[in-house]
Amino acid sequence: MVKFHPILLLLGILDIVAGIIYILNLPLFPLYILILVKGIWGLTTGVQYKDLLSLVLSTIDAIFSLLAIFSIKIDFFALLMIIKGVISLV
Image (cartoon, rainbow, N blue to C red; front, side, top):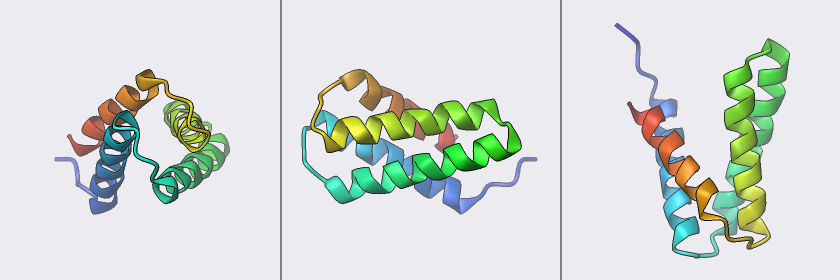
């Protein structure tokens, strides 16, 4: 049986909430900055351990947060964030 970690639950909920807020076009910049930090942190640890999945997911985090911070509306990345969050919850 896989052991569940509560931080993964929080990160999944964060991704889902950020995706929904982005689709609703609400300017919650601290949330987007938090996701940018999460993406950069994931990129640095993914490179260290050569984990391709972590690199891809962290790149999605970084691109999504930069698009949100600069108010560039591409809903595809918001849907990716919601899907990524749901997968983290499962």
